[in-house]
Length: 92
Picture 1: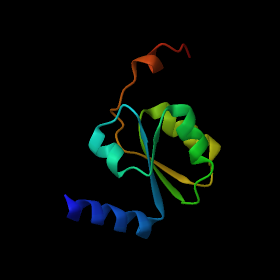
Picture 2: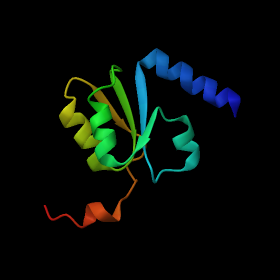
Picture 3: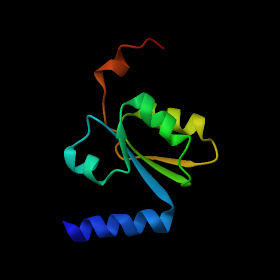
Picture 4: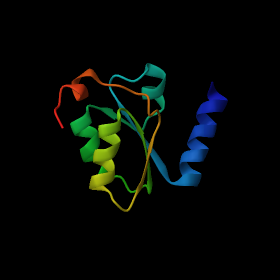
C-alpha cells in the first residue's frame, strides 16, 4: 500500500494535481485526498488551491461546480458513475 501512496504523491506533483473527496466516498479514497468535506466546502476549496488540475472524487455536479468556479483549471472526475440521491431531487 505504501508503494501506491508514494506513486500517487509522485503523480500529483508531476501533474500539479490536488485530490478533493466528498465525505461519502470510500475511506481509502478519503485517506489519500488532500481535502475531504461536503460539496459546499469542496467547491470553496477548489477556488483556493494553487494546483492546475483538480481530481474530484464526488458526483458530477460537484465537478461541474469546480469547473465553473475555475475555468482555467482542468477538472477530472474520478468516476462518472458516482451517484447522489439528493442530486436527483433537483428539477432542471
